[in-house]
Length: 396
Figure (cartoon, rainbow, N blue to C red):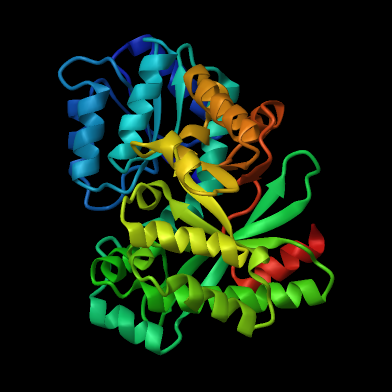
């Protein structure tokens, strides 16, 4: 979608600032602009249209009658498919808290801007919407997931395939790997993202079938890349549910070796929640995986409750900083400090630091200056099927 095709709603109680924003948007080429002086009027405008009224809402935080926080809560509860730009004169820390709250509500947040808003900031946010539009559509593909029997039938019919999101070395700009992400090529609904099927598989203890399928397909693809002279690793996500099976490590080792690949080329990403498990079975599996030669990565670092303990309990070789700390990192001093500390700790522990969710050149530059080892995110490339990934590897 081009800028001139956007429908934008400006929610700002100050008449002068509201008009200034409207003028900026017109300067940037936006033709369809609506405005409201508080959240109450804005939510009524959104509710009152059966067809989509706006693509983006630019919302102030401090407003009478219904402030920006309450407005975001109502917006999330009613599941309106709209992206948000937050703005405020109340300071960066408060704005950062509001931004994190919005993400926790499931809001499609493009960014947060301290007042006075600059034209270049606004242009950057609109550009971010254009780049991430496909991501939002993909994420909203199936809101409530599928029935378990349909998912299992899809696995049986081999309708699932691995998508690959490149990981780039920040020091050399070279491809060093990719994260493997499952996608379902549904015969009716098209491409379905993980939230449409992963929760059902995990809750019913049926996740292993999909894990093994993704691991086998990804390993075969990686072996072919190696045969063509492209040397890099692949990262595969492992569910907590799988770690309770004491034979799990042996099973995935056999899958990798049977396709002609050694385990040291596979990185297994374990969510921090999974790593926190005190179950002896889980720790046995993780230890055995290391013995087999797999690299372990602690995923979503910083989102759990016992982070530092995990780094000493299990032989992790990679620390993956969660995207909630990385996105818009360069505009939030508190986030920058947290990320910098995480990178420093990783280096002292002699493990690689990986930042996920890198979406802008500014965040890339900041991570590079902080000494982060590896980055992935939409700034580099969105997840892609194998054919597209082959082209990406050859061209980069």
